[in-house]
Length: 192
Image (tube, rainbow, N blue to C red; front, side, top):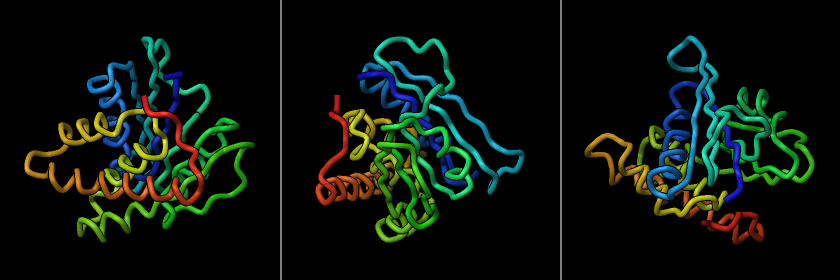
């Protein structure tokens, strides 16, 4: 796997930091890769802009900050407006289709929309699971990590007693991503 620089962004309360944490955990503990994660958020606990940066690589990561975003996952319009400019040409954008309206993107960017909040509400009954739906979608569309690694990281990162609901949310996002790729003709990278 080549070095991947991933930014997960949204607003406080959407589980942005946990999403990035789980991606990094899946890489390091379940896929024998290296990862770093840094995070940034506003002074308010909920509702302010927040983001997390995850770098995945086959060798130790020596600099933990993004230099060129290869994948942007965004769950709010404000975060899209801020971070879409940093998306590298040929990169990948994954966004919450009910909350984000995209504009012009850098050349060659592949954009994939997921109704993550709606799927969480329909499949689980609570929007609280939106970020886990996004992780499942990420697993299907990015194709960077084996879905089993991401499922394992989800299962070991969520509160005890909620594992089944979280895995159901993961599966909802993953299944949506697989179907989307079938309809659009692909775009996912090879799973390692």
